[in-house]
Amino acid sequence: MNFNFPPTSPIAPLEGWFQEAEAVATTPNPLAMALSTVNIVGIPSSRMVLLKGFDKSGAVFYTNYISEKSNDIEANSNVSLLFHWDTAQRQIRIQGKATRLSEEESDAYFATRDRLSQVGAWSSKQSQPLKSRAILMAKVATLTAKWIGRSVPRPEFWGGYRVSLDTVELWQGHDGRLHDRIRYTMVKGEWSWERLQP
Image (cartoon, rainbow, N blue to C red; front, side, top):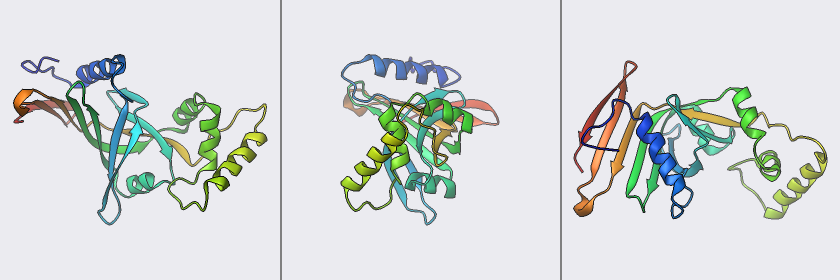
């Protein structure tokens, strides 16, 4: 991206940066992103999740709907996402609202997951206390046997969220910490942008 002449929309630069990050062998988990939420009493929390879809309508990830992150989102849908690629000296910051995907979208993605991940989604009451790992693995074994020779259905408590692109910042590092920063904001259906000081 040429920061001297930013495009009128961040979508093309974002897609380009994702493609470049995936193409660089030295970038570990290029689609890993920090998801930050705030719970009902205002306490923030961050964790790493994986980007599973992206277009002008937002960034998509999948999770257990009874997890702490989902509880936070149901109480306060305002979230932020952060991508950081150290070797490329790049960051992407996104702020927006998280909304559940349709059942059809979640079903379609769930069907592409490897079988152990599908069974794992059923086996885990994500974020709840667990007395021992042996209990979890026994449940995995039981459910694996249950679905031998059959497709594993998506649990109704598991699915996706889409984070809207309300604010997007592209950050390109430079020597002397003289970084380039361009922030895009969606205003009444149109993008506006401004350059930020390092």
